[in-house]
Image (cartoon, rainbow, N blue to C red):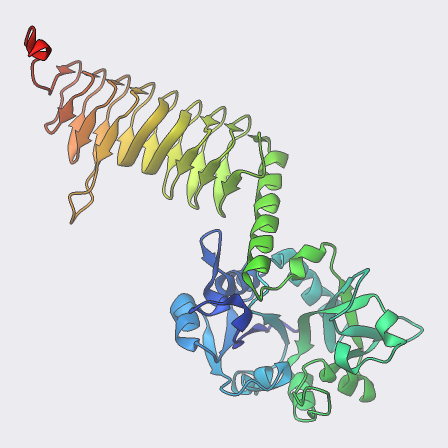
Length: 420
């Protein structure tokens, strides 16, 4: 039984068209590096034994991936086949399957990778590749099939004949190989092409000549195989992921009034019948309950947990905030590093002063409390249940239950002062 599944992520490219001091692989989409997304997609498909092939600006890539993967090094950029060959030491002596992925293709769904692996195992294919149908296939390697539909070879664009250029099925650059036969084929590939490079695609032809079965899976959504070479493509993939995430939340019962101006990051949970108004950003690791109202122009940062029936209004920023059921945070407010109880009302202009220049401190507000407008809550501070903070107060000491706290200078009127 084949149960050893590995992955090789090719992450050695230069990406000079990005026009950046940083590697294209560490550019971020929704706060997460491109190469990290590629690796996490493999992990979410159940593959934990992963080798990243690094080269150009490898220190940056390794800093992002850390010890979540093993590393192989490709110092000379001599093609995809050469990149995989650099990971040879991790393949030797093993049996099973190995996925080969591109580090700059971050939106492949784990379920698509699972489908590739499952077909390869169930059909006993020695190479199973992911393909796509493009109306305009220019620039992509073409899939050459026999009359029975079996994959015979992949021909790169620069090596195609005029007849082959008309083929609309293209190579997506993602593969599942039998480990032992991949090693055997890698020893046979030659740089006999227009680029003088070692193509991983030549492995398909080598396996077919040997009489080994090969096949393909056609991807259902062509956006999954989009890669990144410049900032235009980076923005395009960001938009694709934005729509993908927003669509899933809407399918689960969340109202998003404007999907184009709503940015919801990965790993966000939102309860049904919650409404997200335009120009709202919700970062990762946020949980929002049911029947909440968020925005417009709201910024929900990491680590926030909102109970049911919470109102977060316009121009509100919250970070690492736990907000109790029925609480209203209506407008022009910053709440950071805090816990707010149930059915509180936070007045306009209120802020938790959570940072003293060296340390972050916490503010705790009890249930049914009213925080008057333009209040400064200087952490660390505890405000009890059913308290009332007078507008314009700067609170530096704890406030007991049921108390009214006033922390401002008494008003003085100088009559006729302005006549002078």
